[in-house]
Length: 613
Image 1 (cartoon, rainbow, N blue to C red):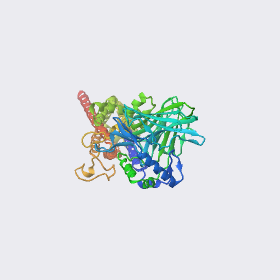
Image 2: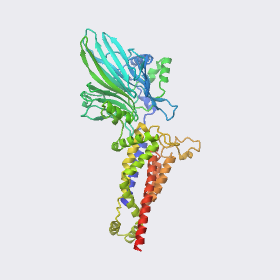
Image 3: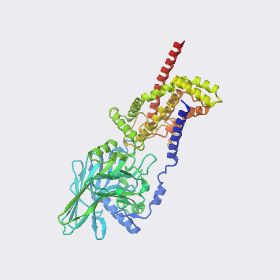
């Protein structure tokens, strides 16, 4: 292994240390409860999302609306994947739990509550409503607290539910249907039986009171795909400091020729409004001011307050960003007496599971729906790796074993290149005594020393730079697998064996409490010091692997490489357990491969020497 190879490994090590240091010290932490409380200014949010300056009157109005919505009758939602309810006060979907996902990695934990009701600090809901254009301006056609009539009490794949309301001679209907997974379809229809010309439209919105913050490796926030010309439009919270709409950003205008979507993404979850190609939709994305929930809560009666407390169970509490409101709007059309019109949208409310998203992308022709997963720069590797891991898991029923088998497959793919490299490294190890002799003979003449060494390499047909290849091949694979483990929901709470119950989390054991032998909680210690069993195994295998490499001629490099396994042990302690398992197993395979190659080269040299003798 030559000096270029050593410098490459050193550069990779420094780069990884910089990445970890950035994550630990420069990623902005979520706001503290005190900061959140300071943001709860007296400004309140009206039904259309605009600030209202009158504090006390608005607080009272919001309180009455919250009480009406909370106490309104509900239609239950039930299929094999989700459960929840729709409020008959405006037809708001503000209660949805994901049956297959727990808040904590514990079977007794609550199901993840994706949508949360109005009146809670974590309010998160989707709703479709009708809009009207009158001489007084543009607004809701029906008050948000109006109780609608329902033709059923259960929304399931077998039983759609229609909500209806008649007002001023106009019949409004919202028909909900749900599939067997995570898609709710809403058909909005209106029939004008009055003797007045009506200008009516439809809008669907998603409001989230506490969006999650983006992390350095995982994007969270609004995203969407609008048309073939603009492509994906990904925005972080800094891009939503003001209202963005079709009027000031043409990317938010839909031509009606293609299906488009807009939504709010977390690391693992997505809510999205999908507009059909038959509707020309305009999109609006705007920030909201945080309501003063303490002021509202103080004016609620005990019964309503207890209801709010009860429905908080199951919340992930991972959001603390600026409130945001997304909407897809069909412009009002003129309806004469007897005219009718309908619009339809789909609502995806569920996990960012690749197979689910890909199925919807294919069957419903939703463009780039799988791009809601933040694949990062190594998408070309991360996506195939996830597909292979999921495929292997179908047969072995263990994602940890799937990662180990993936490591074997990767080794097989790169075997010819790596084999050539390891053979060259083995020959260089055999040449180490001759190289040392050249350095001693021409120690002061660096140019002559290099000339003689290159002549020796040419004579023995050795490429000194070939040792770089295995490391170069590992770098993109390492970061792609890191992305898969960190951002994909398939890895969330995925167990391996023994103490590893979540491949996407750190190794739960710690040397601080002797790997659980001492009854001490180690959560107080930084991840860098909570070194578990798997990081230690990785360090041991790395030490063995590096001992098989040619010794560095430079004393400084020799010291660096002597302590490199220790540095990597601390470094890998901050990475997901699944990634450490991959690295450890990769080291073991590399050790076996190098040992057999070195043995073969040694026997070959012995045979040559015997033939000469």
